[in-house]
Image (cartoon, rainbow, N blue to C red):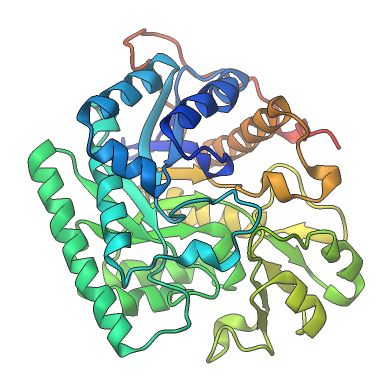
Length: 416
């Protein structure tokens, strides 16, 4: 979906397909039919944005085959879908039965991560709509925090320089600029925006910047206004925003039974207590744990925020809540002013398949309905800030149909 900011810029809103397990071209096309098209139809949108996730093997295949990229672009256009951003954080097997810490490998100390990211940029340059100002790729915040030393930091920095040079070469060849955003995440070398400023000091900010995940921002207990001011002062652009919300427990001892229902084996759910933003070590066990079961065993003081992306439109069962208030504050900081703070937004709730059983979609249709309701929620939040739905045309040049307001997000939930 496209919205127009008061400054005249186009803001692209879509959803990230890392919620789907497809890891080859056939699987990607199947997910477009099974999920993306029904989401677009539920929203009444003529055009739906996707933040495609392409696993490393299929990215290498597409990057080496211009004809395959043209076919993928044609399939997207035929279905009323467009791509301005790719998720390059997970390397492969993101919906495997157990992911946990494997999602941070390979990291930015390796050539494999560099090749993968440049493959994505080359693909995106060919998928971008003709009228898109630029593309974006999100990536991990260098590495998991351990092991990390000066030698690894130097190795990562060399690859960031090579990344900027590679992006410049792609722009020269294609005429399409693509920026890469490093996404602060709990437990990583870059967990907070201050660490991003340090780690990315001196990079080419025309091509490299930050992907701001609003659930991660909340889990770091950062104030959106302060975080964004810090990035602006450092000259680091917000390349992309992941519109996401985390799980919150105001008083963990009385919420322990409810929290235990969210423990699951696939993903890490880093847990941070209030005060984390002021701790010398954000992973200090007095404030933090690297997974929810560890937090429940160690009982750091509350309140807690848990790196568990929850559906935006459907609050968790009491006494749990979500960090949607942080999301709202961050969106206001980004978009309520005279200039848009970012032009690429992805709803990224990749955890639908591991939600507590009563909240989990049981069918493809229920998943599509849930994603559509999240997108409607995000769209309406942006409209409330003054953005307007932009008149949209299908990429196959069918003109004149605009986005409708048919999804009533305040009453849409996946059936329990």
